[in-house]
Image (cartoon, rainbow, N blue to C red; front, side, top):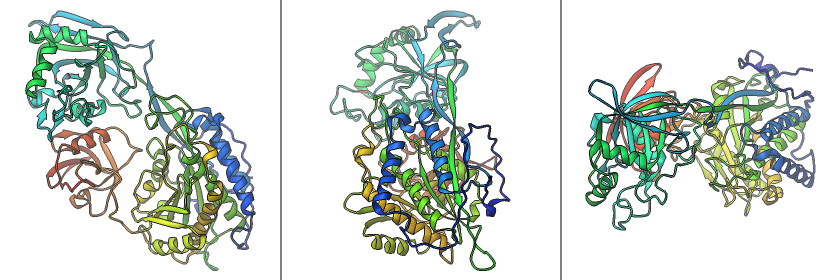
Length: 633
């Protein structure tokens, strides 16, 4: 029987589905009598179910539920089967909402990857050729782009622009950095000077490869060619292909590393100065030695394949019956969500870098997924309710809120019908009965509702009024939907292989599940939906540390081609300047912006109180806005 939620029958999902069969059976059984909370099982039975669900999701066989693994495919199928067995209906016949995400970049050995330095004579003929050999004297890096290139060369020192340290390798180049292949030394100047403005042998942020690449992109370079500096114990050693990042959101410009001996040969031919002499002069004077290498070019071709995979948001609903005889409010929707993906065997988000091991993700976020299922079991037995309750298990959260970002851009239910969203992320480590709940200021009466339910359930609560944060509720709040995000706090196992099922507090999870059921029930039965409130809360992005405050909210579902935003924080510098959700920032001050890393790097070059011109693409046209940056937060 193909069940559907009648309030959504006018909404057609346009995503093609040539999918694996889950053989799901919709067991639609909706009661018309409201039951007392907790009537479905004893607390011990609820604990047993939660333990079984978390243990299954976090088992080694699930391979850390990393994107592209068989483990996450199995998890998606299992969650869909659980939704069906509980009796949740698909939405317009859809149980899986498919989207595509990039896994990582790979360097195919059978395809073209070659490069050479050449010196051209006045007539354009090749006077000198220094060929490079893949894997021996050069390697492309995954963070860069593919394609052929033939670019003039320039030496850009350490590739650093550091206003605080009053040092800028790009100053001598000016516009000569544009469309050049830039030779960039690794690390920083004055590494052996403990009194250096660059902290001596303690690297600053400017030593990071991603910062150097972002800085080159801001100066509109055509390519980056890294070379080991004089401090390298193995001067000609090449980095791992993924050393600067996995390449999930690769840039258009190629990024290479070339062995130091080859670069030293080139530099001495081009400048008559050994590379070691240039480094020594920079160290001694802290004055850049950047220069165009007249007549020299970088030629070649790089082929990087970016592996993509299908991912699924799993959906199910309890259809609403409306209020009174006119059935008003039946199309209003309360969303309860949790992400079910994790880090697989470890990726760039792992806090155990260099370790290839299953990251089980028991708390993050098998706990949220298990609680989602438990709440669905309870409310399905109690319902139906006046408002529809939509349950969503999101994929792609760990890669940048991709699943929730895709859903809010391609909703199965019109977003104007979505009254509120409740998010469960890491609810498995309850300590001292304390919960953290974000979003308490985003909806009318949320504060009172949370206080009442938390007190009745015997918890204490730390409340954060803002609606933005590094989890899926942000995607909804950016669309002006009230949100609540429930969390039991971080811990030393976060994003590590040690986040295992045996460390979860199942008794605490059982109580939290009952609390969430009460919360969703309240939202589904309240006479009026909560009023959306814009909160000037703590910044999610565009602020923090030594960066001036900007106040933009990134749209992770739209990588590349600039820095796309879903919205701006209330009363933030970005909001006051007129930036809007949907804008794509392509320039900040003098810096070109091709993505979030460039934006972060560019922002750090300015100070609070400074007014900078920001160029955005809005509806296909460039709009220039003046943003006065705020104090760091």
